[in-house]
Length: 303
Image (cartoon, rainbow, N blue to C red):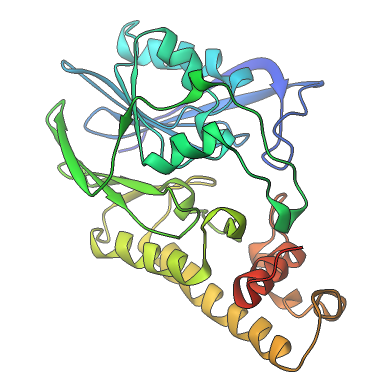
């Protein structure tokens, strides 16, 4: 049984496509979904989806969203947890809409786990050249405090929590989280429900690695698993299978055009993925950007 609690607040708005556009004040909902076993999804649709596990052992959080959203996230969490601070955090990867709340929670005593490449990226961030975007800025305070170098598990609040690293997928730092007893998974940005995924070619991501990561999630899930996406609503196995099929098909289309000797601009002009747009387009990754991702993944050429 799912419980949806909608909390209306006025706050600075930002889209994932432009996470620093804080000049437009708009009202929006934080949607809190009770997934079972005191695991909740906190979703704003303005940054990466957050998961929290609450119990006697403390509060475990997956991802921390952005600075301008973090107090709202914290206030919502405190209503669920009887005013408790977050004790332990897992960053699923290094993109800013998943780690920018780190400073806030670290100041309040939280320990933060992540793949070592999260810390390396924060210390030396690189641009998203394939999408024409500059490198973000961080200070050392954003860095995780505990490195997760291999698949591991922890025990907290009656849950065996398995952490799986998937190499060279969305980035080179991805970890997805499995709450075994509750049969809940947080996929980070390995899962973007009903939309094109962002595959960060500049920072270790790859189409083949992304597909393998989705297969890894499918291997530990079943028809009853609640799969929290990095962006979008709760996903199902069918959603993941559909994403794999779409990536295989679109990759093949772009590869065939590259083999004909066409440049990136020539391929864009053809709009070869137009038939996928209605189902998969969203604000951040459109068919044009999906063409670009496939092109650089195949050619290895970055401007």
